[in-house]
Image 1 (cartoon, rainbow, N blue to C red):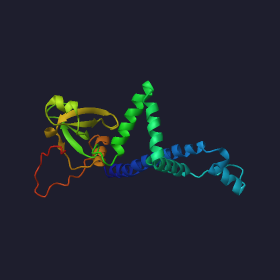
Image 2 (cartoon, rainbow, N blue to C red; image 1 turned 135 degrees about the vertical axis):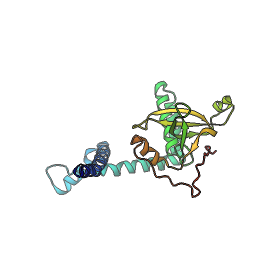
Image 3 (tube, helix red, strand yellow; image 1 turned 90 degrees about the vertical axis):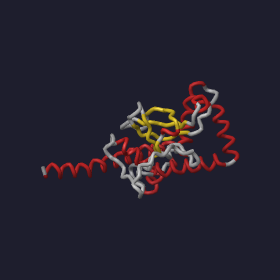
Image 4 (cartoon, one colour; image 1 turned 45 degrees about the horizontal axis):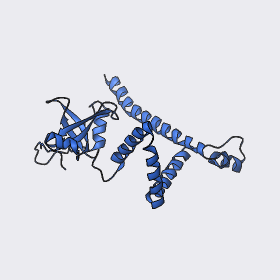
Length: 221
């Protein structure tokens, strides 16, 4: 039993470490491929080969990460000024005229704005909702609180929620629940994602209120 415990302890150390290294290596290799957009004579590996006179190009892992960062930075700077905004507006107008591309581009743009916008409350709050039926609770992320026609037709204040699947939280279901029935949890988004990905095995430590109460707090505005 002790031998088994030691082996399991070793696996718990090496498996997460190995997976992390593999994912980082995959991401770095993927971004290194962006160096291919640079003309051959200007690529760092070719320039280093010419400088040091080696037989083969000198490849330095991670240069693609720097290139991707610079491209994102330059794109952001250009898109933030007047000329850049006009160009982006024209590009989006063009995308909006293409039937199939229009739906994909619009959905991707809206999702990116929700996830990365600092001014949005989407995915900034973890909720507990009764889904798929009363008496069964699921973790959800609040995606919206102003639902227009949906709220008007339901006759009560509702919130939009994304209920992710496990172990792949990138897929899931969009549900609309009454605000009074959505319980706001103390755990942050990262903690909730860990719990979902681990099939509920990794449970975040609850920083309980000093009074020890169990508040049933509806989702705020």
